[in-house]
Length: 312
Length: 273
Figure 1 (cartoon, rainbow over the protein chains, first blue to last red):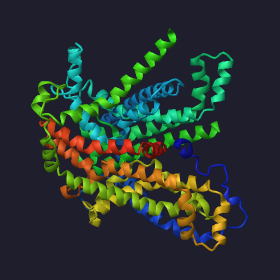
Figure 2: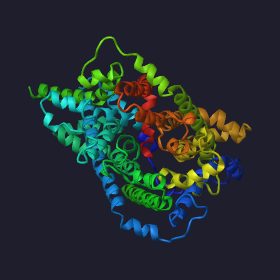
Figure 3: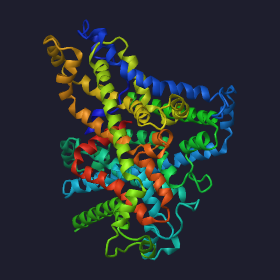
Figure 4: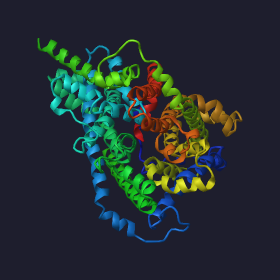
């Protein structure tokens, strides 16, 4: 499906591009540079330049008000290394990553069920599962905030109705459940998405492989384990890595549902950066946290690309 | 026997999960047609007559007309700008023999991994000094810059797969780059362009962080950020809040149901992000 067409490829690494090996140049030749200029200008002005600025700000103790920030060297990074609140927020991001793995597992299970030949209504199920993935996270957050309300929400009412009133609580105000409740909300939008990606991969598997496996006497589980899973390995890797990176950047649901609370129970790195920069007025320190987040993401991406290269 | 059992359990599991996917939204939509007091008394009910007035309250008090207008301008503007600058760039980087093509492409790829948090802090102060804060054009420029790397990446991969002979033939016919892009490359790259349009539109339509920082006055707020203010004002009036949520979510679901295939293709194209 689309994913196979858009799979991230190691940019240029190793393999010489087809074009450069062609003799001579096309008539467009060097004169084609001007076609890249608008993109490059926009990109530099609103992405590259600010990144450099952030790196520089992270070495200052700027408070956002004074005209010229004071240089403090690595002081912000040193402080960050001992900042319990930063590590607690990073821990919440990692918990979120684990949650997204569960959702991917669920997506895999659903995709496997939908790819079975005798299932009817495949398109309908697929369409329904994907609905939450089309929603803006702000809308999802507001909706689930209402569902989690202690007195008027759907969840407690449902628990009451099936005799589990012992479990009812203010899901987002209880620091024991708040993080789990937000993560569950995030994954409500995600398992259907994962299912669509995985199902796309499964449908591209050559049916003859299944026939051959059946002839060899493979059970349904063995066919799944030895034909399906290897056949969708690319999609699985893609989901695992992309969700990891997206989860590290996550912000919207926390902002809408809990503002990082109760206390700092649901604070994630992005929310902490936001709070530092724009609530407590310490953009210099926030910039250092942002640089660390970016470096973590770059490292994970690099590892992913390396693994992928080796698999090839 | 086991066969029937297997089928039944598979269908049960699928139906339960499908219900989990849709019931939360359906419930919100139902709450939007009741009074807040009725919901508090019984979260499962639905009374007659339906409280359609919630929608009028939400629409007016929530300034939905303004928010929808702003969201549309920003999303359309971003999509247009992204396509307008990414398409020529991807064409040049993917099909012409530019000396620094690989280097430039790598530079753009870097943007795929950059979280918005590593640009937003200085950008906020820059935009303020440029007078671009609280302007729709400012938000469009930022969102377009953020969307650019993915668009170039997807388009370039697509254009490199085009048969070279076609481009050569176009050149021999005396077409310049712009002419070639428009009349030869564009029709061939239509599916990729379509995916980018859907993806970028949805990204922009759903974007929270950019408007949170760069669109801070009520007259320029887009729907997501407007909704968060709306949520703050109507925390106790759950019916109006539900009506507002429905106004924001129902159209998307309807569009999704109609353009299912393009929608899914567009959104999953971004899985590489």
